[in-house]
Length: 408
Image (cartoon, rainbow, N blue to C red):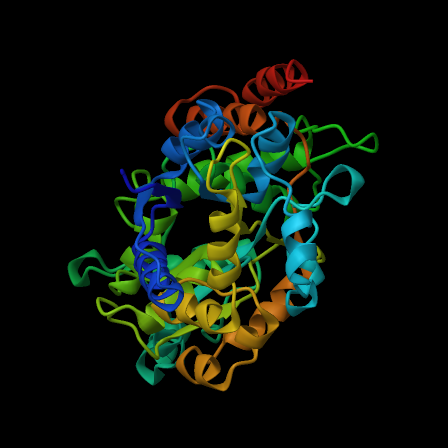
């Protein structure tokens, strides 16, 4: 008799892959199971296509998957996700072990819960604190700019500091960013640039509206930032967020705006050259503008078409236990339980881990809409046009808004 196979679609990132394999092995050992599992790691576009685009969660190709919150409406409306309520009630699982901010996006009609928190970490400014604290760097910066070298609070200060640390001969760059157009990196950067200029992604009716002066300023700044060879890592246009984070961990940048998890990763992965030299801070903004961050998070979800739903839930329940949430964090992910946030060992290894709660205080979320993936494609295309062409930015915004309006 052929053994059943458990198939799980994984967000491609080595710490995730390592953690999933270790958790599965201990799960099978503790339960006395002899089941073959296939954990398939995929980059974002491939993962979206596999689990939603080609209906993999709905038709049973995948028993479970990692799914990001901005895909949830699309997945739910296509009936791809199994509601977890009956399983949660049967186990009397306590959801209060997680912050409310990690329990909202996955709740739908009639309080259906379609996922449990896997990986979190809002966007933030990640810095090389050893460079900022260096007496020599402080003296050199003051000589050059006539002010104290500090973590930048405004975008003008950010550009100035990045220019100061741009040293290609030392393989050190002022900043590195994820400019690869995958429907995520540049979209998130656009949102942050918009918000830190006082703009909003939606109008008073809740409709997505990017045809505004703040959006044009955001595009203009981002275009000049990405194309400024005096401040950026030369591979910034080709890097997605993971590659960007790894470049920072190799010591190739003084600053990076990326997910909190990539700061924590620097303290735990073997290949990191900056252990103990990293800190996180608020993302720069215009003067007199409220701070902003973006909070999306990853979930464990069960496919509606799976023949192994109970096993999938049992594994997810096991994977989200306190010990395995901590294991994920020590591998380089960001555990979501409150117990992990306050764990003494975690905070000793990652001294700024406690700052997660501060970031959550002002982090924003993306609009909930089943057409977000398509809207994100249009914003992504807009960013690519802005970066790589000399088209008038106002025209690009108008055309993109027209495409977004057609997504309704």
